[in-house]
Length: 153
Image (cartoon, rainbow, N blue to C red; front, top):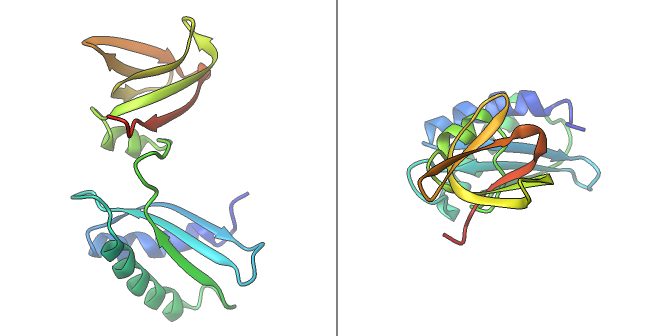
């Protein structure tokens, strides 16, 4: 379950990231740890996300969070990049990674295959479309368990 502060934290983090030329791709607040850990995943749309991007975002977001006092108690702020092997989940990610090599996992197997590898074309309400050696394949979304970037290519 998402922590109730996460939507407010996202609203604060997005403009901070945009000012630095970055994008927020995920926020998780782990309150079961002591102190709690606020993890914000970012990416640099212009180049590979580096340690410098994480450091700049950490400093800027920490100042914003401290100024708003949205989190009243002590916490650890962790800024990271989700890495290339992460799953695609949002419409924005499916648009951003159009043309990228992906692995689509299905259950039950679709047309006898549980893994489909190809270039991402798009996603709509019913299917995920990939290009496999020049052939467009529509994989029903109700059989798709995950779509992730293929880092092997």
